[in-house]
Length: 417
Image (tube, rainbow, N blue to C red; front, side, top):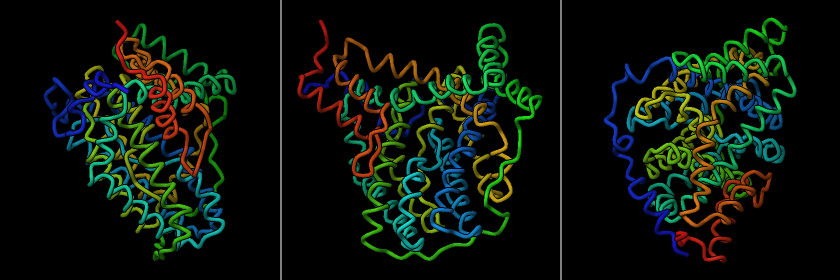
């Protein structure tokens, strides 16, 4: 299969030492502006709401104490925030850190049959796997080889759920979510000085307050000091947790983050992103959290046009997101009920609206006829949109595999003349 065009499209994207192409790294003051702050807040609210509840449910399945649950939340949010801050300052790109949401979901079942000390050992081993793959450069080489349209189709399929979720949120709460969506488009059309995502969030929150929809959530977590768990290493935990978790971090989170950054014209430092995810995974594991890595959804929100017209300044949204994640991690025991008090529909609709620019860019690049990967890209799209899970690995990874296999069988890749 010839993929000269797609390779050329991503050539040079793996060094990562320079900032966004054609742009000089801008000062921090310029990067922290109304658009970047509002988008960073949206990304943080998204990451600290529903995903936190998944982690709490996994902790309940493992019968963890409140102190162990708080330690888990501290590890993934505080370290995830540090990853965001560090990557943004180092590379001047909106590379966000968090944790694998699907990884937390698979632990709901996995923790039922393992001691938590075994799970902690598995978390550390998972981080080590990712770290080794980053140091050896395997992931960077793979990203060079993968055709750009298939990567973009995977991104579109993986992130389209945000757009669908926004539509469903409007159906569930037509007044609140509908008002937020309407204000978003009106402001985008008529009020250029105000970030549409900020206006949508403010109006949606005001409507939710007026309708009495903001209610503190009841969750089984206390405001206590974190309790850390000593790891134990077993083969069962390695195969049940370490391997699938590492695959999710690389195939779902890092791949998504890399793809959305490419879609927005950045040159992501793939090796550094993978190594950072590995180190974050090992440190978070030692603290009792399942991983702290580069995050796909938060990177997509913070790299979108909603974070600013100048791509060189959008890293400011990642800094805001990182600071808020750190604060949430430090005060998780007391913060969780208040964050979960926000209506889910409001967070979902605002996050979906923020994704519009990224989704458009991904679709446009995925089905660019001149690159010649349309069928493979379509297969990658539908697989990524599905709930396919094989060998504990979720759909985005298999979307890349399926797209490449189909394109190879059809000998796609030659430009249409």
